[in-house]
Amino acid sequence: MNISVVIPLLNEQESLTELHDWIAKVMQSNRFSYEIIFIDDGSTDESWSTIMKLSQQNPSVKGIRFLKNFGKSQALHAGFAKAEGDVVITMDADLQDNPEEIPELYTMIMVQKFDLVSGWKKKRYDSVIAKNLPSKLFNWAARRTSGVKLNDFNCGLKAYNKNVIKNIDVNGEMHRYIPVLAKNAGFVKIGEKVVQHQARKYGETKFGMDRFVNGFLDLITIWFLSRFGKRPMHLFGALGVLMFGIGFIFAFYLGIDKLLLNPTGRLITDRPQFYIALTTMILGSQFFVAGFLGELILRSKRDRSRYLIKQELNF
Image (cartoon, rainbow, N blue to C red; front, side, top):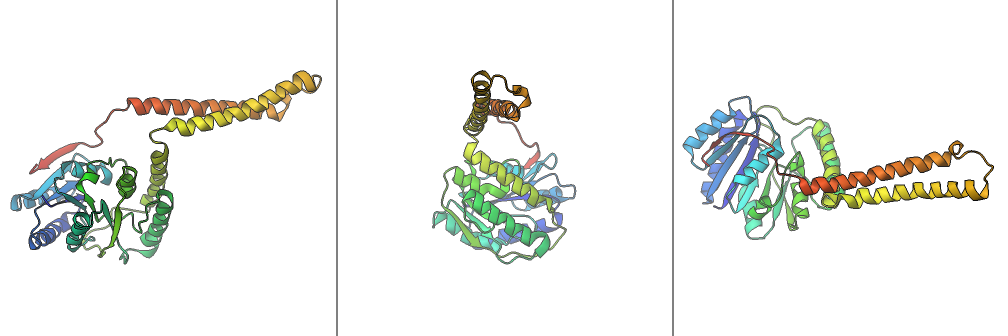
């Protein structure tokens, strides 16, 4: 199979038929073998009924329905697990991503041998204050922190070599950082393509300003995990040893001073150095224990289901 199109959605009933027809037209005109995987992330409208109708009309349409809303990352994880195409395309269901971009994205993966190609909505039709400026700040921080030189981490339109999506784990809210996850996994040929952005035709956006706050917090998380996720003792243990060492030096100095240099001086507990020594030794011990517990958790963790599937179509 040439292409799998993975589309997570939440309450996008009005746009699904038009989106399906557009994708199918592009695929047929380019003679691609394809599948369209819709992941209904707990919609409360008639999105699933629309997906069922589309699957009856077109056997290339497949569906996954979550029991409730688990989030876009979990929806992508479920879609990636089922995808069979040599190239996997992700896009949003709100018609803001243009399916006409698919053939060129496919060529960049199969001919130019990119591992991943991310869309760049260079010209946007969103609110400048509410979305454009926060997005620019977020993308700048993501580039500086991750080392991945992309202009638009948030673009839902991306193309992947199949090997990429089968070897990365998208969880939590990490869908924004799939290029970073891919880089950390060893897929370093990451490209970017300017794509056409279209104004939302139906409904309202499901994302508010809180997604940027969460995005920055996730950025810190992925930076930490990429550096210390497999060796937490290297961070917490080092901090623990440093803090404990500082406290021990203060305590040693106080002991020498009281026993040898100034035995008739004021009590040790009346000196601020005593509390500095005590505090830093306690903090050092706690950091060391945190690193040790992190190592134990890492070695004993079990894979757990992060979402519950209520229904599947055509798998």
